[in-house]
Every structure is written in structure tokens, then in C-alpha cells.
Amino acid sequence: MDWYCKHVIHGNLSVKRVYESEQLLAFHHTTPFFEHHVVVIPKQHISSLAEAEAANPALAIELMSVLHKLAVDFSTQWGGCHVGTNVGSYQSARHLHWYIHSGKRIRDRDGNPLP
Ligand SMILES: [Zn+2]
Image (cartoon, rainbow, N blue to C red; front, side):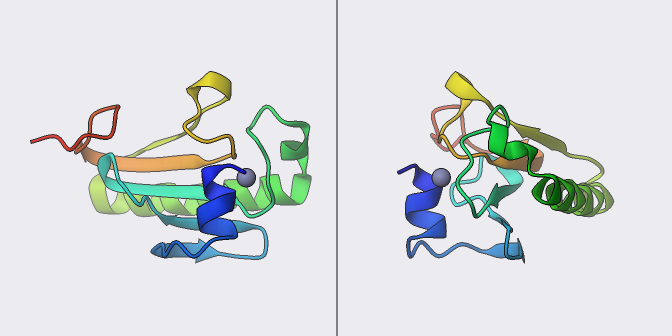
């Protein structure tokens, strides 16, 4: 079981939620790499954007709507943001997750805090 299914969806890890519905959960990254860093995941297990299940139209519509709202919030508050998702060997966990981040990088790629 991947990290998101194990700890966030079916586990007891406490996350700071910014949005939740039957299908989706958005929360502040537990170890943020940027000053402002939110993660959006489907509650149903989908490995990545490349998986066939990701073509679920209702989920895709809600996901885009949530990403849109977060992009507006981030842009309004901090002037802009990056929105993205990784696939395959680029993934830190094999569960579809989207990142929205803005501001200064506060950790390096290995997760070590930057001065
Ligand atoms: Zn999963």
C-alpha cells in the first residue's frame, strides 16, 4: 500500500485539510518543500495520471475545479503558483497526487531543510 493510502486515507495521520469531498482530499503538505504547499489526492486509489482509472469523468471534473480554486487562492495571496503531478519514476508515492506550491523553496529534493 502506498504512503497516501496507508497514512492519509486509511491511516490516522493528522493533516491540515483545505478541501474534502467524497472523492477528493486537499491538505497542507506534511513536510512542505515550499513556503506554501498543498497536495490534492483522490480518496480512491489511482496510481498516477497515466492510469486508466484517472479517466473517471466525475473525478476529473471535480479535480480540475479544486485545482482551479487553489490556483486562484494561491495567485491572489502570493502572486502565482506551480501546479503539477508526477508519473512513474518521478513519483515519490504511487498514488495520484497533485501539488500546488508557491513561495521560497524550504527543502532540497531529498527533503532536507534549507537554511
Ligand atoms: Zn493509494
